[in-house]
Image (cartoon, rainbow over all chains, first blue to last red; front, top):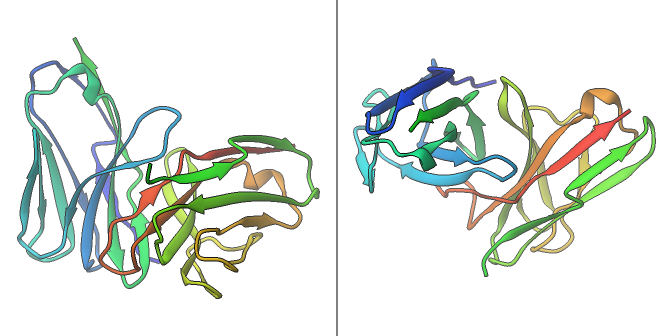
Length: 109
Length: 113
């Protein structure tokens, strides 16, 4: 089936730094979604991207839908301690959703 | 409050003992889905349902069954659980399939010994 390669696997950054993570695939997706998961909870949607080339912001978060429809990135500006968690990219094709393995974000205050 | 609920949240069982994990949503969503989450693998889709009485396999359906008799409920059934089904399970729903973002429940941690 479809696979997403998400990188980096984990990050340990200083509070106030900018963060960047991305997902790539050999397959084309119709929609890209970025989720965050806190410990003991389900993933929560951060940003949804529907068109190739689309750039969307949600507060300190910015994500882009790659022009080839095979990749997406997420940037977090000026990280704060509550940004800690696991970030997942997800690509939608047809009626299915496939997830990357996640990026674990740890912030040093 | 709009939400997806799952029960139970935690379950420890033995190999071969049939179990059901319930999922319910109060948003009148047509689309519902089940995922399992394992370390290093992200979330993998087990089954999904486009609407009442319409279900289809995801990427890892073996060993699982689902049913969609009502719009709000989408139970996950393990007829004969095995240890390799020990995992964290999430139910999700969205207004429709396709280009609509999915909303997740809180998860059910299942251990099969």
